[in-house]
Image (tube, rainbow, N blue to C red; front, side, top):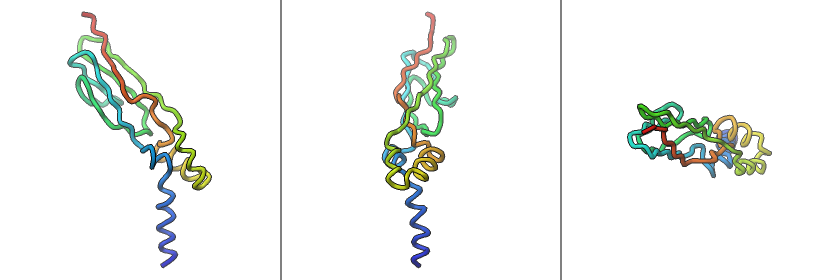
Length: 126
């Protein structure tokens, strides 16, 4: 019975990491436009008109676009930086599983987006 308990306990401990627990694996992105009737896209998927809020995995890249017929598109790319909370994994297992495997490869929690609010307005020559 002890072996079974240990076999179940060890993976449960290692499937959590500091960055994934404290910072999460997803980020809420808000985008809006000052031009009425603008379609807003995040990673080439339409998320709304004029303003939108969506959740994006930290593992993904972030590409935003605002489009309106008769106007030139406005675009932006979300930048990521290292999430320092990840370093707490050094105290758990020297970072071998928690940082390299979980935060970096599996969940992307090693990164955080530098900017989560965007204003994209297409250029409409009136």
